[in-house]
Structure formats: structure tokens, C-alpha cells
Length: 424
Image (cartoon, rainbow, N blue to C red; front, top):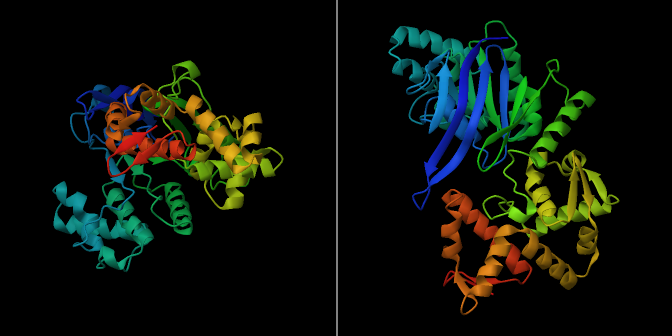
């Protein structure tokens, strides 16, 4: 077995919630990152991927458990890592070369050595000729190359990447991924391991030797999938697609550690509403119905020119409401889904209302709250305060907005923006 560069042992991380109570983000994460491998952390929003990466880098302290670098417990930043960020994080007043030299300057490296190492890194990453350019003169792909050069010039044991391709257009991202893997395959690549955060299933399979699948709310390890495919990898091959399907099933299926409660125990925090509009989830049900009532999600994504991950919230919403059944990578219209998608608009709205009232925990909670209020009205802030006990402020707001949109469509309740009042 290869040496463990970084080891996490039962790592838990909580942040203070809006009401002062702890908001659990990571729960008992144990993981070794080994010399000579690429590891992908794959999960949806709420799975704590970026928080976990920052704990590995030593940028945030863990609440309990331990993070060790080469056997030594961290007490501050991890000296064996450097990071590439999603948003490039370049200093706009510095040139390409000056940006690349930043980390070396912070480590006290002499100006002459900084210059030599920075120019070498710029050359490796394909930016020679742009040493004196400023970030505003560069395209998004070129700016991210600067981010890679700045990280690699430190020659870290472990290169950490937080969704480094998600801010780029599709072709630029594909080109940069390919070049990174080409560099990784060379004997003089200046790092011993890579850990990349992604929500993109195909990206994980293209890059990683191991994929760690995280469940959400809180983040827990659901599974580890090894990708034993030769590089460069062909995403059209049956072996590649089989791993994509396996990961898709892990991300969408229920089971221990996925944060999904049993139906009778479901609460607004255990079963959050997917970030999906009624029109979006209804459109997905119609697409599956038009294909004979059963369809392969990767095929749908390819035909629509979307990533599978873009469709997952719609899948989750349709499954939560009982309109679709999910079997691995296949979607099947249920009996109630058939009624919903073939009925006239008013009947369809009634079906939606009945399903949302019974199967969407937050919508159900709002309906019950309105039924017990003296005048059939409640402040939306009442529910927002409750949601903040289990979600970040932004996620709590998104949950409430989704519930209001679903409730309005089903004519279960209305919302007045001026008075911030939900009315039954």
C-alpha cells in the first residue's frame, strides 16, 4: 500500500447556526490520501466537499477528530498542500509572474529563485509569453492556468482543487482537464497526489483513481469507487459508462449516510426540497413519458446537452413527489406520474397539490402550521428561523422559496412579499 500523505480520522466539523446552535457540516469522515493517486470528492450541495478540502489544507480547524500530514497532526495550515480555486483568486494588480511567485514569497524564497521557479511553472502550464500580462488581459482558461502554476510552483505533496473547471466553458474545461492529466502522467510532475472536489460525475471518472461519494446534510462518506481504467479515458466506452451509472446510483439512491429519513420520520431538515421548479420537474416527467414511460438519464442529459448533475435536482423533486421511480440510471413514470402528466391543467394542479402536501416535508409543515394558526396566516420568517437551525442562511432561504413556489402552484397557500406573510 502506498504511503498516506494525509489521513483524516473521524473528522467532524460544525459551524454556529443562526440561533446559536451548532450546524453539523461533516460527520465522522475517515479517509487516507495516498502517494501516487488522484482522488475525487464527489457530492451534491450540502455534502461539505469544500469544507472537507479546507480541513485537509488546514485552513479551518476541525471540531473533533484529527487531520494528519505524514503522520503529524495539523495545528494550522498544511505545509504539504497547495490549492487551486474555482474562482481563480488572482491578484488583479499583479502580473502573471508576480501572481505565481506569491506563495514562494510568503515562504521567504529569494527573489532570484522565485523568478526561476515561477518561469519554469509558467512554461510547464503553457503560459510562456504571458509573464508580464495582468489577469484582466487573460481569458478564463488562461487565468485558471495561472492558478495551477501558482499552486504547482510550491511543489506540494498534495495538490488540492476545488471545482477548478466549473467556472470555464465546456471546451476550455475539457482542454484543461486533458492537459492536467497529461502532465500528471509525466515523471517530473511537481506533486505526488491530487485531490479534486467536483459535483460532475463524468469529471470524477475522467480524473480519479478513487472517487469518494459524499452524502449530504451532514456530509458523510457513502461509498468509495475505484476507477481502474487506463488513461486517457474514453467516456464513450462501456466500462466508463458503467462507472458513471454506478456513481449516479450512489448519488440518487437512498441508504445509510445519505441524509434521507424514512418516510414516516421525514422532516424539512432530513429531507430538504430539491432546488427545482414545478415546470422543470414536470418537463422531466413529460420527457420520460414521451419515451414510453422509462428512460436512461445519461441519454436524456446527452440529448439535451446538459450534464447529468444539472438534471439531478429535477430527478429528486419528481421522485420526492412520487411522479418518477429511480432505478440506477433509469427513470420510470409511476402511476400517479402518468396521471399528473396526462391530465388537464386543473386536474394536474390538484394531483401536484396532494403529492406535495403529503410527500414534501416543508410544504407539509407549512400547511399544518397554517391550519393551526388563528387566522390562517403565518409570517414566512417563522419558517425561515426554523430552517436556519439545520441549513446555512442561503440554503434556508432557498428551501423556503422552493416551498412557496410549490405551494402557490398547487394553490395550497399564497405569499405576500410586502407583509412577508404566507396565507392559507
